[in-house]
Image (cartoon, rainbow, N blue to C red; front, top):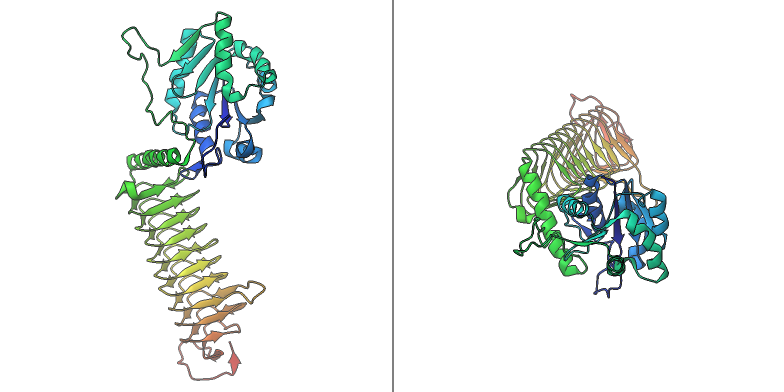
Length: 430
């Protein structure tokens, strides 16, 4: 099949309703335009062209980013030259699609193209949807006439049909109507060919797209306890045997491993989770959780947070731009920002890394197997050595040697023997 696909990323000649910006709107975290392009790709077109419009629809940078690799983005006035240069005029079919029918399916497009080619028509119109097929060698010579006459790309079918009929060319319709008035082809679902051109239709399309996404994951072995209250973006990936509880949002480029337990009431955005992770009533943003780690309820992983294997982060904890090594326990009511925490560390309740001095951020380093007592304040930049301990309520302003015990305000190193009890004051502030 020698097929060229043209997607019109413009709503020509329409008065826009309040709040409607056209092509830049998204469904399930993906640009609306991208769904149309993705539906066309399985037809294996030799050329895929997106035509930019005016205003928001003419944002070439946005349209190029939404279109992805292998797509040519042009202005309407450049379309005739683009088609001629692509060789579409030699032979084959040109399929023209509106950019605001995100629910269209590849199989429906395949049926339309097949019907057009079997009919040998110059033009085939898909009823009710604005989708058109053209015989390439007939279409290309007539595009300059449309441009010179001032016709908009969106109005092209009207003028081209008139031209074809004037020249005795065949104009076909899909689905074809037989004498008994029954369609010979399967008519697509009305939602599939719905033009999304206002916020009401956008909400309808969003609901249908999320239904499709949830159905796909259910069939792939992911348990959705209440699918109607589970929100999964189009680009999300989920491993089998994962269970997702209601009011959970998986957004952006999130990757979920196998046998995880997510929710209820959680937001996971642009994050990566290994197998067997648990997230309950928590928010994750640009974060990483390795295998078997857990968070919640009411935890927050901000950008750059990285929980190692088997990390436990309990209620009302927050981590930002920090790495917590394997087996770290951070039970509750703590904040770690710009920190590196070694394996096996215990973070007591109320621990805070004081990472910002009003002008710059500073790092805190906590060595393996350390014990940070409740309500410890670590004033960065500061380092706690491997196996060291801090007493409850300590304010640590200087480094603590390995295996030392420090407490007080400001904290002083009281002992460097891990087997001794606090009491021998070395006089060194920590």
